[in-house]
Image: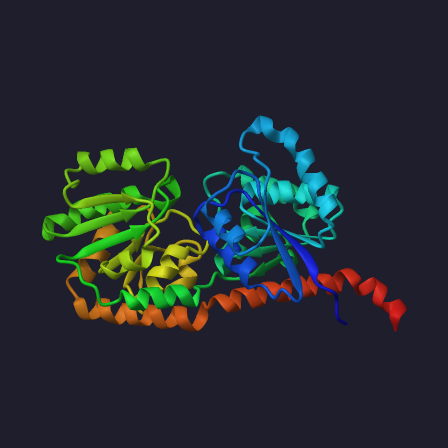
Length: 375
C-alpha cells in the first residue's frame, strides 16, 4: 500500500548548536522528499541551526515561547498546526516534547512522536511529565539502548511505545576530520567539547587535570563550549592553580580542526543520552575516555575502542588519562578502533532510514482499520 507524501512538522525547544539540533538538521535535509515533506518549528527564537535550515529552503516557524508567562502563546501553536494540516508531529527536547504532545492532539494531528535524548537524572519532574502525558504520544524514539532502558525503569513507559534510533555522523564531518588528521600540537593535549553545565561533569576533569599536570607539567587541556557554569569552572581552574595549562576557548564551529590537535578526548558526563561530541571524537580517530553512563556505554567497549571510568570520580579519570599519556601505542590503537566503529555502525544515513521506517510503520498502523474495506 503506497501513500502520497506526508507532511511532517518537527518541533524543538531551540535551534542553537547542540546534539539534538544537529540531528534534526541532518534528518530534515536528508529525509526522502518523495515520501515526506518536512517543516520545522522552534519554541524559542532563531538560532544557528535555524538559519542553516532556512538556507536549504526548509520552512522554519518561530513561536518565541521563552518565558513561563508566554504560555498564552500555545494557542498560536495549536492554530498553526491546524492550518498546516500536518500528518506527523515529531518533537525534540523536553519542553517541545510536552508542548508538542498537548498541542498536537488539540490540533488533531494523526501521529505524534517524541524523542528522548538523555537519561534525565537532574530534573526528575521531567520523568513525571513524560509519564502523565505519554498517552498523547504514539511513539517515543530513544537515542540509545541505555536511554530506552532508563525510560522503562524510571519513567514507567511501556516498552512497546519505545524505539531506538542512534545518532549518526555525516560523511562531510568524516571528510573534514580526515583532512585535518595529521596536524600535531607542540605538546600533549587533552580536550573536551561540551556544554558547560552540571550534566557534563567538567569540574571532575579539572580535578583530574591537576593530578595530570603534576606528572606532565607542559600538558595542555582545552575545554570547548559555553554554558551556565563557564565562570564557575574558570574560577575553579584558578583556585586549583592550573589555569596556565587549562584553556577555556568557548563555542567553536571548527571542531574537526580542533580535534586534530587533541591527543586524548575526555567526556566526564554525570549522565548522558548518545553524546555527539563523543561520536565526533571517535570519528576523528581519537582515543576517548568517557564515564560509564547512558549512551556512552553503547559507544565504547572499554579498552577496545576507548576507556570507560566511573562517573564523578576524578581519581579514576586522572588514572585513565595518565595511563594513555604514557602509552602512545595504546592511544593509536584505541583511536583507530574507535574510528572504524563509527564508520561501520553510525553512518548518518542509517539514522535517517530507521526514522523513515518508524514513520511508515505508524502510518500503516493508522490506516490499518480502513484497509479491510479496500480488500
